Image (cartoon, rainbow, N blue to C red; front, side, top):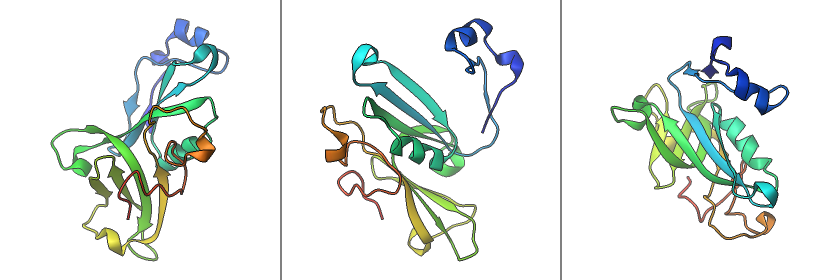
Length: 175
């Protein structure tokens, strides 16, 4: 949910970015909802150590990205960027994220998201008070453990990378 206009397009950097890609000098957040900052880096080859930071607005999009990682890319950090109404402070916060769960308060209810930070704190995105234990159709859509600095095969190390709908009991408290 980011907005920009053609006047914010950087012509020189966009030309260098390659066909079909543009570089923007200004974007606007269109709604007061959480979003995600994901930093990843290349592990091998001439690009080893190069980092990219992505801004994503949908938790399902983040889960899909984590689930589709290629072997040469590792996620270095995943941050939840939350508005004050969600984090119960007077400011937006950017905090390391571990999990996102999605559920409904009733059979016909809309989705409510539960964000689990790496330090164990939890935020519930609901316009009204809700007990997490009462949520129905609960599904984990993001499960991320930070990179541990050890280069191992990700198929043999389920704690190292994030994914969609995967258990990682050793990373965070979960439900």
